[in-house]
Amino acid sequence: MQVVKHIREQIESGALHDGDTVPSTRKIAEDWKISLATATKALATLRSEGLVRGVSGVGTVVTTSERVHTPTGRVLSNRRTGRIYPPDEHARIEEAELVSASEQVADALGLSVGAPVIRRRRVTYKGETPVSASISWFDGALAEIAPKLLETARILEGTFGYIEAATGRQLKTVRDQVAADEATGQDANDLRVQVGSPVLRGRNWIYDTDGGVVEYGEYVSATRRWKSYDYEIN
Image 1 (cartoon, one colour):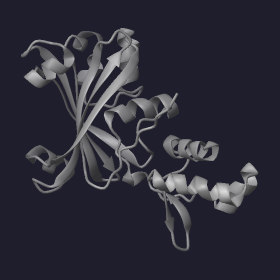
Image 2 (tube, one colour):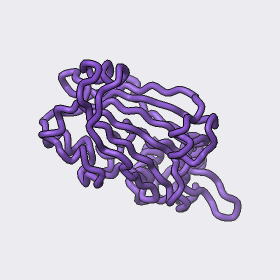
Image 3 (cartoon, one colour):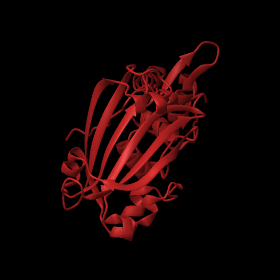
Image 4 (tube, helix red, strand yellow):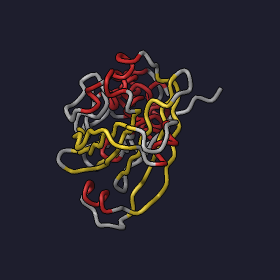
């Protein structure tokens, strides 16, 4: 598991890119002074997680293109590696505006229906191919103390780091929901797929240390991309 964690962190930090080869079982065994059987198990675990795959004549290569990068994943990635997206992926903020809260958004943020909320819509690309789209919703009261949320320019320190610095609110817990669904017209336009195509849809609530919702998010991902979770069992 130490070997798996080390290689996983290299992939998440961008030290290993999509398509890069990871060390062979023999090299892992030599470097870590473990048996070939244990090294083989380490690579098998990484394959099972969708982080690498075997390529005939090449070896074991990184496959970040098969992972879903969700709003929650942005928080965890930023905490662990200082990066939000893998080196071969990037997001474009398509819209950043102040709008009236729908019933769903108002309930999620603990506001009244029609209250002002900040809406940030982004599309994530691998190269120039769209792979996911998401919308982040924030209390409109943040418009004055965190005005960058209403700009489509990239926030260099990341949305969550910016909010923490501007408000002092520390992120604490996250709740995720996911479901299989069909692509809407907006999804089809963002992901360049047909209306009705299968997609993975999700939504999340990010809470601060006092239990208040800092962000409510909704996202949709193209098919054949894995959403991963890590758990520690006490």
